[in-house]
Each structure stands twice: as structure tokens, then as C-alpha cells.
Amino acid sequence: MNAPTYEDVLKARAQIRPYLSRTPFPEYPALNDLIGARVFIKHEDHLPTGAFKVRGGVNLVSQFSAAEKARGVIAASTGNHGQSVAYAASLFDVRARIVVPENANPGKVAAMRALGAEVIFHGEKFDDARQHCEALAESDGLRYVHSGNESLLIAGVGTYLVEMLEDQPDLDVIIVPVGGGSGAAGACLVAHELRPQLRVIGVQSEAAPAAYESWRQRKLVTMKNTTLAEGLATATAFILPQSMLWKGLSDFRLVRDQDLLRSMVWLIEHAHTLAEAAGAAALALAYDLRDELRGTKIGLICSGGNATPLQVQMALGTMTRTTNNS
Picture 1 (cartoon, rainbow, N blue to C red):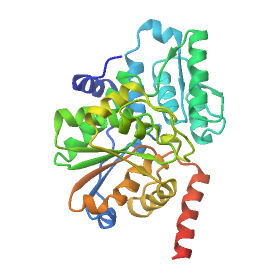
Picture 2: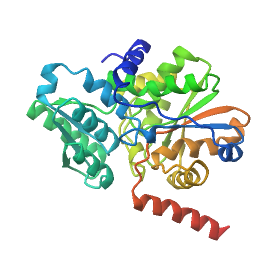
Picture 3: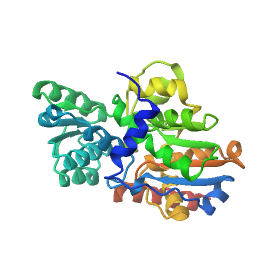
Picture 4: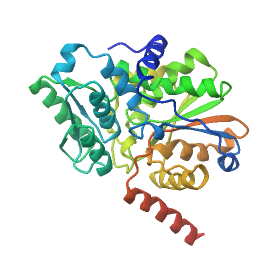
């Protein structure tokens, strides 16, 4: 399992260009005031699946051999990786199956089905679905697309930082949400090549800290997974992205789920953006680090915008309770 190179990222950019538009990276004055820094949001929520992972999915499936296409693909997902694989499979006429937890985001499930994928429900958590997916891949001879241990996925998602640095080449810091770690790994790869002084900071929920603890301990560990943010909800870490994070990530922090909900509301109020909880994680950490970040120029990755109505209600309810208690 080889790590991708910067040349792989450039090839990925050419591969995905016919299918995916460049995403915006605007500055928001109200967020500048909130954080005390110049704040730019990379709107990966504007991609066709509402999340960054589709960059990797299109890059990977576009390079399948004829034999791989004929076998069909299978993936395990809480939603965004599954949508990515389903979208890419629909582009290149490949049969797709996606295994999801029983409580998977219904909007993401509907989107996968609309793209022609067969959705299979299994287990309470992502890792239950992943293990079932791996068994099906083996028994049915399908091309298993792992959500983290795929070099072409990481190269594909790394293209977002190429775009960011073209738009704002003097960024000081970027903050990247981490579930499996492909997005942060791709960012580390590109930062090392284009702007070595750029600090790449990962953020994960303290209710699902497997990737954080694996980075901190420099070994793969299994941890609890009780977060409401499905994009951050992994109980185990993955070796390929972790090996890249160990080399390239400047820092890694945890945030509380209630702060993810609060940041969802801030993005609605100050950036006209409906983010899912994982997509709001970078802003949540930026607020926690506002004294450290003061006066800098920062890029925050809004990794996804696939919030359910219930999640939005929870976020708004959190702000209402905060206001009433103040």
C-alpha cells in the first residue's frame, strides 16, 4: 500500500476536472470578527454529493481497469464516502453496493439510491458496517473501496488544497476535519510540496477520538465512537492516512459535539452555509484556538453539507438553550 505523491494529486486534478467544478473559497468578515483572524471557508459542501470525498471517488473509479469495472464496487460508509463511490460508479457505468449502519443519515441513503447504488444496512456503527462490507467483498468478488486506505482517494481529495493555495497562497493555517483521515492526509501531502510552512491542524470529535489517539500515540488504536457527527464517526484508525498524518500533521485537537452544533449555527448566521456537524468541526476548533490564531490567515474545510432536518433542529436547540441560560 503505497502513499500517493504530489504528481498523483496533479494527475487526479486532470482526472476529476471534467466531472467536478472548483469549489469556492471566500472570506467571511463576520467570522473574522468571531475568530480574530482572516477566515476563509473552502466550500466542499458545494460539490455534487455535498461533500469533499467525491473528489477521491471520481479519481479512483475513473482509473479502474476493465476487470475492476466488470466486478463492481462495494464500500462501507456513514454516508459521504458512499455517496462518493455511488456518484463515481454512476459516471463510469459500474455497479455499486454501499453498506451503511442501521441509523445512517436518511438523506445520504436516498442520494446513494438515486445514484443507482444498492444500499445494504448492517450494524449499529460504521465499523460494524465496514466489517460486513469486507466479508461481502470477499464472498462476492467485488472491488472493495476502503474509505481511507486507498492512495487514489487521498490524491483526489488533496486537490482541494491545491485550489486553496492558488486562491490564497499565503495561508498560515488550515484546519481539516478528520474521520478516517483521507482529507487531512491529502492536505499534508500538498502542503509539504507547495507551502511547507503551512500548519495543517486536524480536528475530531472527543466522542470518537480513534484517529486523534492513533496520531498522538503513533500507532493504530481503537476507541469509543458515540459522536453525532457521522463524518467523524470512526472507532478505528487506518494505516495509510495515519502514516501520512504522523509525518505531516502539525497538530491535532478534539472538540465537543455540542460545539459542533454551535458552529453549525454560526455557519448559518455568518457564512450563509448549512453544514453538517463534521463540516462545522474546523470552525469549532478555530474558535477554541482563537487566541493562538489571532492575526493569522486561516482556511477552514467545510467538508460536507449533508445535515438532516433533525440535526439542524438539534443545533438550533443548542443555541436556544445557550441564549436562555445566559
